[in-house]
Structures are given as C-alpha cells and as structure tokens.
Length: 140
Figure: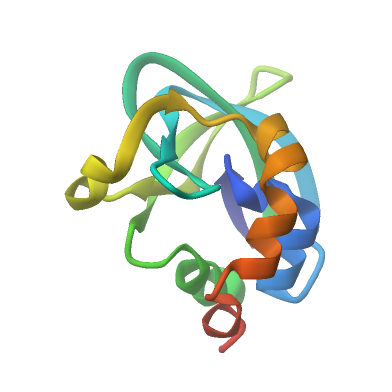
C-alpha cells in the first residue's frame, strides 16, 4: 500500500477518485511542517515548497501502489514526487510521499498562500470542467 500527503486539488474526494478510478482505502487529516502551499499564478491549484516555520494542512491517503502512475501523470511536469514527514492529529509521524513544486518552475508561484476553502467555493467546478490532463492520468 502507498501513502500520499495531498495538500491541493487532490484533497477533493471526487478529484482523487476521477484520477485514480477508485476511492482510497483510508483518508486521515495530517500536516507537514517547514513547507508552504503557494498559489500558482493563473491557476486554481497550488505548489508545495520548503518554507521555514510553515505548516501545510492536508489529507493522507492510503491506496494501492499501482496508482502512482496515474497520480504522477495528473501532477505533470511541474511536480516531483518525494518523501516528506507527515504529522497526524494523534501525534504520530510517518514518512509519506507528496508532490513538491519543481525548482525550475518556482517563478510561476505567487507569494500568496493557497486556500482550500476558496478552491472549493471558487475554483473546483471550473478546474474539474477545464483540466486537460484527465485522459493522461487515467492511462495505466
């Protein structure tokens, strides 16, 4: 089984399910420390970068490992999958995978913190309707 710390669009169950073609086995809240979740200019989705003192809230998904290829395709060239230490609400810490924004694309990030609640009310429907990578993500 694989574990992913999701901090952006994949926090929406319908987006995760559309990418992976299934419901994850388990979903629990978590956070990573010393990172920031910033807005990508002109986009509805964020990028995760190192940021001393920052805390990013998200969800930790457990799912079959064969789905990494779909998630990698969904995230695309701007992101690289790397391990990060996630903290659970019960204090447990665990090494899980997450998608870091690649340094060569850092200039596309704004200084504004991405807001999940704002995405839910203002960006989710448009993202689902206009995202062009669904087919690539669903190829195995």
